[in-house]
Image 1: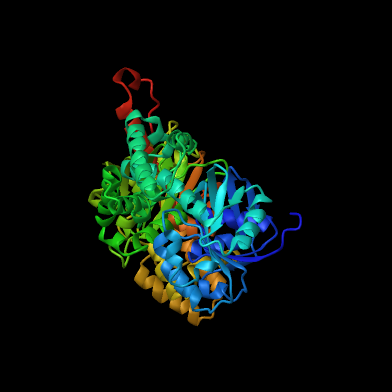
Image 2 (image 1 turned 60 degrees about the vertical axis):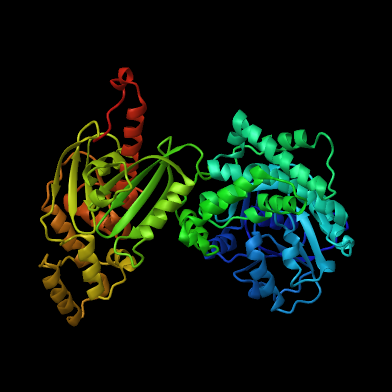
Length: 617
């Protein structure tokens, strides 16, 4: 780090640009504070730091992580970076100004033409630096950025040459840790911003409209021709603005864009996810400057208007950030990733299973290998009647769903699926992924109990269900525990510490509640009450047939929330009973696997189908 001074810097916005800057400046020895408004991301970064993968590989922890600009501005910063979307700048800048900061240098780290001017209503021009970023990445988890490319250098400059010293200081810090950055004069930073915007405009809208990654767009001759023409239009407009490029500029642009790889540009990702875009500062600015000089920029105008039309088709998306925030929280909350998995958004065929249960709707997405990429759960009786639609929209925006299967009580009313299957078949297929061959499956759900007998091929041989009464089910446990004032999350732990052998005499929920009240009045400890409730459920299951001598697996929401019930059932049947991870999602996983198998069967020539291994259903 040499003699580089330690400075205090705040970074607002933890997208790929903000995350990478935060990590690199921390590596340079600067005192870094970050602002993260999203609570999921905030807590994840606080607990686990920021992980960079791909071009840069590191895990960095931060002591100063704030949930609001107001909280963060207690720090006396030397620099403040706005690593936000252009449409978020005004509100953020106003919030900063309300803290009455002392003189500080602010940095605009947005893509687009004239975006630095968004800071002028709040900050003096002499304090504003513009940064042109030549790296990119995708968010694969709340605290993880997959750095897809860095084509050095970045550029930084004072917008009126008043803060050249500060620009040089920041450039030196970034250079010291390998994030090559050049300090340039104000006229050159304008040229560099046009250069980068031309690159962004050539591909971003096209990728968003066509749902193409950069690699896909650059590999196709027809789209490559479009890209060259968009660049030609932009260069003509830039030259009318007295911004000159070398003769080989267009060839250099094509070479740069081909290095982008299998990556969705930021604007394309926003459009795909129904978020507000920055098209006004990309192709829209080229059109605007073209009109100033009476130059037609027809392709840039076409893509500008297409992006606007596609954004406005969803009324929710007209409220800045509304649809995008909901979509992002759903995906971040449900993404399942392996350490070596770099999949982001739709990169390969995916398949969806939806289990519409009486208590919860479960969503599972698998990739082409059958591995789980995403899982999500929603209460069936939800105050937001459109909640399942929002989840489906998020899934369809982020994964290339080739085929889907619905199961559970509500399967026949779920119009968004390609096929429907019974939860019994889906349970057998889901469990077979982890426990192939002959077995019993005990599935205790919200309102029923099922015992499924699978043969040596893992297929359903026969099954048994409890009577229509909900005794012994998840609904029974919820109501009884509520009457006994026992937290559902604590019930298993409490029962585990008890040796009580009495059980509820009544399976009827109404009479069981009365019996529970008597236990309470008799002063029976809460631990014994918990175990007594579980014993009554075990006896209900014991009345159903369970074939001996073969593995027995428990699945369903009840075992997920009441793991000690598995122990009691094992004692009751005098056999080892096992469970699977994420047991509540095993049926939706089975539905996703059936969707995958059905799709592949449709794609397989008839002559090859006899060789395919049959699924459990």
